[in-house]
Figure 1 (tube, one colour):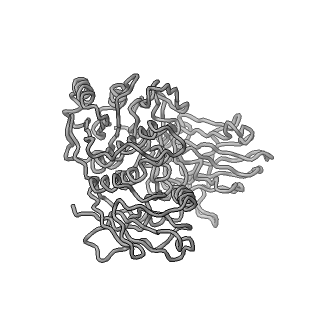
Figure 2 (spheres, helix red, strand yellow):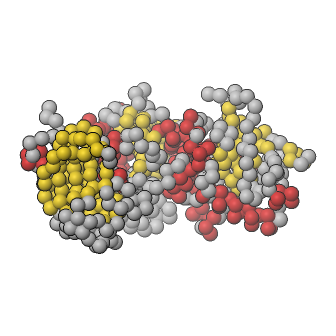
Figure 3 (cartoon, one colour):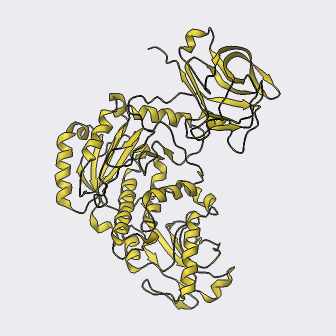
Length: 534
């Protein structure tokens, strides 16, 4: 692995305020094999210090002050040696201070908060697609060791000693118990015992080894620990959001815990899922997730969410883990991890949340890992036993209903938490699904309206299926349809579809049978295909 360097350089063109302020840019990993040094040649609205990635010229951290010697030491420890530079003929060492006025500092703070939310660097950040640098941490293997063969999914958990309650063993048990033998072949669970109390870690790993010995032997369970020496100083951190010092310390360390875990897991599988150490799982959650991943083939995504709570059930491509790990390290003292995950998703150009219901994971802990405080949060979309994600075969979608804003047809057909919304449909209007290839359908379920817009349902409509595709000026269409049923209270569900018709289905059509003044929300279109017999 080649060395990475940080280059500290400055410029002050294009900013009137820079005439009275010291201006810096701090670069981050730069390939020393590359020719020359490419420093970001852009400037923020006001002068501030930025940590920016030399590989793609994107700022990945900023601050209203020069990094302390502790921060520089931390970066060096992670294999990022620093070099200094001059500014306006003054040479600054790593401990030098800048002569900022109070007004300067105020403006820098405002710019820092603005910068993290800015979309101006999305394209360049997204271009960091080949970044595979790992964090220079030597982990201790407390139980198990990685297998040579890559798995389909890594499930990562980070756990620390709690003042009240411990749910880690129950969480691990739920993961394994709710998975079939075939599913177990495709997963590896990595537990990061991140507490600095080594006696606690040793005691807990003995319990884990005793209860899950066969999973450890099979390579399905690893327990690791990142030594305290690799952590930065956790005292004197910035108190953003007026959080008390102990809470800032807790969440800052938690960000580093997860960053180290992500870095360790980056080459173990195709996908990575983040869990907390106090959850229970839906039965066959992996099969449900694989259905979703397959349904998203060909579409861009950064994060798929299978729970609406915290960092439970967040799915990533493993190739994104190195830059996510570095992102958490750079911003570790700025804000909680779940907030940083939202910013990371946005910087990689996934603007909207892609969440699937019902949820696959439920929070079960009663006491928080922070001070043992009560935490009664529950995901009311969780279904443990009856979870059934539809197959929704690949198809083209058409409608002649006037679509409202960006609530387009695809949002009714996806498994995500989104919907189609059209303006007052008239008699004869339709919503058409044309499959890429004829399909055997076993079950169809369509839901219209939402809890907060209960009148925006299909008041009068029919469900049809068709065959014999023909081409038209407006796209493909089936030339022969039969009706399966009428909508009742805005919904319809038809079972045993393959026994009601004599052909493989090429089209599914929703037809409006009476005009309505209310708008129409199609919340979900769910299709289950007939599984071929063995």
